[in-house]
Image (cartoon, rainbow, N blue to C red):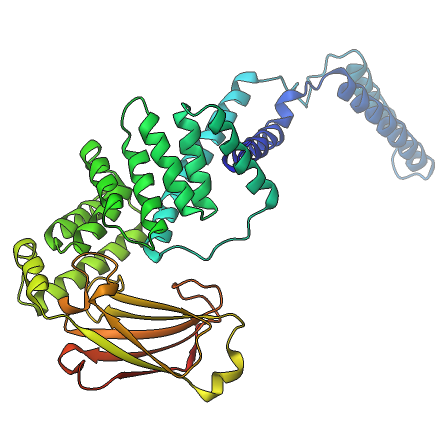
Length: 420
């Protein structure tokens, strides 16, 4: 039993409990027992009131004839209750199976709709921010995932099973294994599926260090041929197109995604910011979105290679705050342009100060090289978790650099900030 199935069973159990609690009164049939209790209470009240009338008569508070009239009225009420002719104040609550089923269906539709809306696009927002640090995986869940993998080796034609295994590997951030499992699912599927192809592309991208080119890009393109409006394929397909220098295609895909009415507003904001940054980068190079496909790749191809020397130092105030086993990342991004790094160096057990070199050979995607841009933001980060994504407690520093002065002197970056 895998993590997805366990989650589903837990949600089903909670839903059933909610239905039982919400419809509890409809399961009970209130009849003779409550009526007998009410009559006993009425008799006790009658006796108490008779005693009060006797006491008031003896004390001279009410005349004898009035006391007799009050007793007669009380006697009539008790007799009416005893022979059952008085209408019931508390109506019998009947069982209502139809109403119970209706409530269950409404709760199920609400829970499912909420999960699909929130879960799906919260995932997309996480994609936009990059992969989170590796979670601590429950050994029991890891064992169930491995058990599913073993079962699939004995029954390799189960395409749905391979897809489920791939998603489980993605959740546990075993990206290479996720890519292999999704590849098996797509190979054995009765018909191509856009969602499975996009899942394979996503796994390939993360397994390759967020590289959306090559085989990953091919999967996204295949998914878009099957479903041109599939959100995940539009997002990654846009990234791949921009990375390859086809800015018009990337921009068009993101604009198509922005226009989808059910898009989460936070995701829409992220996409609008990226489109605006892309337009600004093109404008700085004298290009429009329409001219970008032909002009941008050619400009990148003919530009002279760029090599940045970066001197990294640690501020004395942070000397005692370096996490044990911290990994040093030094990377460059375009000052105005796509957010993907243009070059990255990863160094374990780095001793500061030191000098590193960033150049075009370290590009993460075709077309996204240092030589394709003129201004850069250089970041040096000491990461305790080993992730290039900033995490609270990481130490970092930044500096700006220009292509025109890259060969004149090294860029100095001082790590002087604690990531909040």
